[in-house]
Length: 422
Length: 157
Image 1: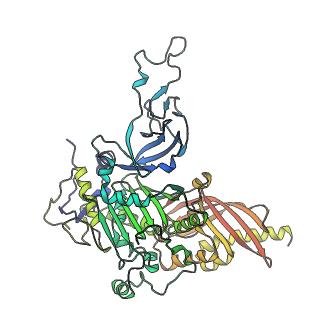
Image 2 (image 1 turned 90 degrees about the vertical axis):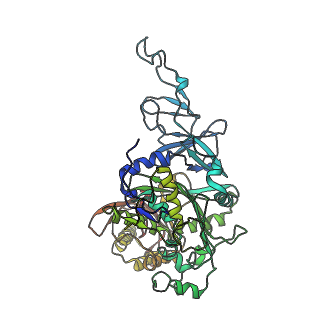
Image 3 (image 1 turned 120 degrees about the horizontal axis):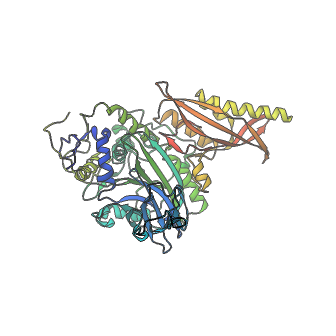
């Protein structure tokens, strides 16, 4: 039996989050096993990044380096990026094309299915040295993750107990992925952001529609996303995934100025840009949804902000560090002008995003402030307590409680342990 | 202008560009750009893979003005001082009526506790044009080796 990290989840509706969950190294270690290597589907890559046989790329599942490749039959594989011999990182390139993987240390060679094919000097030299008689090359295979894909999005799991991907995502998420990937895509490029905070703080951030219209003043000011607009948060049946959505231009001056009263810095009705083209939404869907932030437990966010499309992969690096790995794409049939528009709108998000640059800062400032408050709790009550369900307003943080309900289930944390929390 | 005058003017512009950012004179800093300027921060990773995505891009001076406006009025970012260290300026040759110029940079950020960290290292690949003897950037392109952006990218590189 493991030693249970001693953290307290006093509220059975997850309206209190112990700060220790973001700081305790023992919790972090367990997460790598129970969350990232547990019965979850982790985002690995997009198929458009691996169009040809022999294409490979390096990625992460939590903190584990993983290599994804397409073999000579076109089948996708994912392996722990580690040679079975002495544990060296097998593939050092970020992306490329190869017929095999050769470990730089001792030249052990694996094919694209992960099977060991060759070891130099197997019989030694002049009958001396080399592999033992009973060494069976055929039994040595890279540690493989199970891979499934949906609409060109590649997920992997370490666990045999994980339900099929389609069931794991659930109909709400399936609908959104089908919408975002409704035709072939083209990769536009990557951005990387080093965030000095716990990986769950970022998961909280994207499950918190309430902050979008308050922290991100650019958003509110220019009307791309205001809490007074039509929108909400759709949860899957288990509350572990979330879809924050809204529709541009569905609020009026009165609701907006009343709602933002006293926050004059956030909503500035007289403020306008010199070049408004960056804010323009070119309709691509039959619906009027202009913003989708789809968060899939535990490591990915899919984004539509107007015409800016990307995935954001969360890569944990210890209790207080993470990398956010942004993959931007457009559709394969975009003309040059549409591609330019998407690239312009890439300025809205990412580490230098006019809207989103604040998130990296917010996460770090929470991490700094809670370090010595590990017996205390975050309060999550906006949108109501109790039942965790789909929200019809953006003034809510209920999806955060959904995340922790599933998190605690996987971590085996007892909840509702105290009558009241600080 | 003589070659020496051109060289001096280009060197002064490159130096002023950095010092105006470090001194937080961003509104005046805008005067270093032509109206049809391009200002871009590129990730070396994308650049080497021929991927078009920028880390930050302004395709004209109005978009650059909006960046500064947004920094002043809307964005919340880490409170810091910038300090550029500019390497030797190379004038690579004439191009499209201007001069193609290259220089390496290091950009340090210092926080409110006086702790300094390297924020970005990379190369400027600029196109500088002259009007009435005054040099301006028609293109200012910073290719960042530091494409893993620490925290966030707020003030210009």
